[in-house]
Structures are given as C-alpha cells and as structure tokens.
Length: 103
Length: 205
Image 1: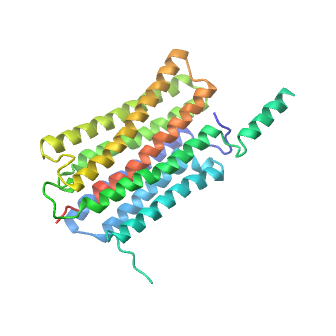
Image 2 (image 1 turned 45 degrees about the horizontal axis):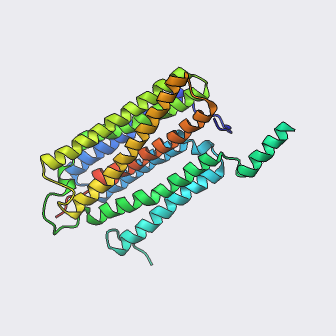
Image 3 (image 1 turned 60 degrees about the vertical axis):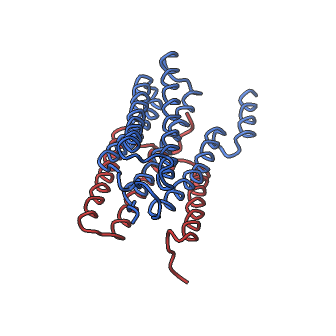
C-alpha cells in the first residue's frame, strides 16, 4: 500500500459517512416528488445540484482519500473536472441549452 | 548501498513521490471527466428538444427503482473503502469479504440497468433509434454500465487472486487501491447522472 500521510477514517467513520450520503440521496428523491406537487422549478434544481455536489465532494474527499493525498493529485483531478465543466458549459451556452447572464 | 540504490531508483522514477501507476490512474480518471462530460452534454442537448417522434426517456423514468439502484451503487463505495481499510490493517479475510460485497452490489446495479433497458424497449418501445433523446440516454447510461461491468470484472479478479493465494500481496494491495479509485469514480459519475439525467429532466413539450 502507499505511504499514508494523514490518519484515514476508521471503519465506523466510513459507515457514518455512508449514512450521511444515504440521507442526502433520500432528500434528493423527496425533492423530486415535492417539486412534482409544488412546482418549485429553479429552487428544486438549485437544491438538487447542491445536494449532489455535496455527495460528489464527500465521495472524492473521504472515499477516494483526496483530502489525505498529496496536492498534485488534487490538482490533476480538479483540473480535469474544471476543464470538463467549463468546456461543456460553454458548449451548452453556445447552443442555447443554458443561459449565462451578465456583462 | 543496496538501500541507496533502491532510493535512487525510486527517486528517478517517482519524482512526484507518488506511485507512477497511481498517478497514471488519477490522470486517466481526470480525462474520463471529459468523456462522460461529452455524453452528459449530448443528453442535455436532446433531452427536452421537441419535434421528434416517439417517447422521450424523461416521460418513462421509474424514479423509485432508479433511486434504489443509486443507493446500491453508493453503498458499494462504502464496501470498497472498507475492503481497502481492511487490507491496510492486514485483515485479508475482511478485505476479501468486502471486495466480494462490492462486486455483488455492482452486479445488482448492472442487473437493475438491464431490467430498466428491457422495460424501456419492450414495454415503452423506446429503442436506441427512436429519437435523439433516447439515443443519447442509452449511450450515456450504457457507457456508464460498461464502466461498472469492467469494475466488477476487476473486483472479482482481485477476489479470485486473494482466494487462490490466501491474501493480497503488497503489489496486489496497490492494485486494490487503483481499482478502488476507479470504482469510486464510477460512483461519482452516477451521482451526477442520477441528478442531471433522472431528477432534473423535464419531459419534452
């Protein structure tokens, strides 16, 4: 195994993290049905994106151990993610699927 | 002298201080963002663009079923990290058990996807060529499923090696870590797909 630089979570902590992720997933599904009834629109989209972003960060940070790795790994991973998001956001904006306001 | 030689060799090949194969896996996963980003973008372009014949994916999603599938894949990330943790504590039996559990959960997720595809095709008559939205949906979720299938094969291979050799060596320990990184990546991609494709999709007008 690779050299560990920081103390990784214990199995009990991993179970707690998984429980937290399960709760977030349950809230996401609940939001889907709440939106069907109340028609929250943009608010629903914003909440769902925030919830999935939290899940994303928790899995990457704790399960993939990015929090405990050397910064170079963080940069590689974040670099690819930011590049992909930027590129495709521009494509979607250019084709009118998303609207970027400003300027 | 021997230690110095080893250290020099180590420095020459790992100037970053990270195992080359591990760094390679991170670079590969980073590039996978572009791959899946293209497929998700393609889906978003066509998912609610009207004017095409046939049923649209967003009209027939079974959210309770897909939620259970998502939960299963999420929990497989837990079993994966528990396998890694068990191995770091030299608990070979624990690592083997959690590896198998991860592969089993991955197989359950795949079974769910096959069932979903079967239902969409047989019950709703939505095939790959029904319209661009259906095509984009099958290509995106199909490629994700292929990644899961490859992950299951790698997990079962490690489990088989561990069973045959009575445990995983240091070399195979790194393999487990790399497979784990791949598996968690497949999970985070599904987190995005589940939200963007299933929960945020609006049926075409």
